[in-house]
Length: 409
Figure 1 (cartoon, rainbow, N blue to C red):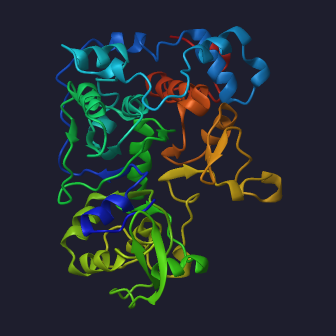
Figure 2 (cartoon, rainbow, N blue to C red):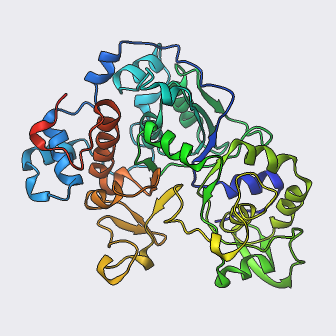
């Protein structure tokens, strides 16, 4: 269901299902006020023993025959039966709850390198359900050098909001915004996203952009009807036969998705430019504006970090670094020219919800994050991605190539 009601709601909806990464140039991330010895963090490496890491290494390398069956059963043991809010009571506020979560769940609270410390990243995260996935995502992308703004949907149950506050209470560089403020943050939700790169790798990727943005922006004729006609929005979005006036911009329209990596200057510009504000107003009665507004902004010459509208600058989701998504209608045999292999998880709205068998392909891609993950579909896939990212962040070695005999803790 899509809603296009007001400018504030438009921006919220445009940002659905994304994590927006902004390059922070001036302000470093604040330090956590819940310090503890780094050795404690290392000893809580996902609470996995060497055997579990070896199993994940085999899974990520595509060697299912190399997975010890008893260890694999252990990985599956903690998988919960499907429920709407799994384990929310674990995160509810209690005395020193935040400190215990940060300590026991193994948040990395010490800078890993000077390069990461000198290049902080800002995350804008919108959540509304599945508290466990929020905690796992935050833990996977967390460093004391970054800044995180968490927006909790106002319609979420109070118990969910309390759990979010408890998780973030000891992290002074994580801000919870129950009331969204469009002048400060873009809004998004990322309940099914997960990083496939360490923070250090993300810093390196962002530096290589050298101030440019990275997002899907292409010409797709089939999607033009989404903005050429007025749409009525109630509980559903319905196309009318009324044609809209041309967009109030000089640049042609482009198609894309809601996933992007943009510079801080980009964010500041879209709030200051009257042309873009008028464009946002014009967008409010289109269908699925997240699939064409950001892509169009990226091709406007006046927008910082953008690309020219020339066809030579077309960029697909596979070429950008924002998000790895596997669409059902593009799956096939790589030897036949298809962009990616069939999924091993399941499909949801034509998007692959990844299974453990997808990990070898996923970790070889250049994207920063991947979508979709769901513990109720395949929790082993998430556990092994957690292990992959954390092990590389701490030890500098990849479970994709490391020999099982070399895995240490």
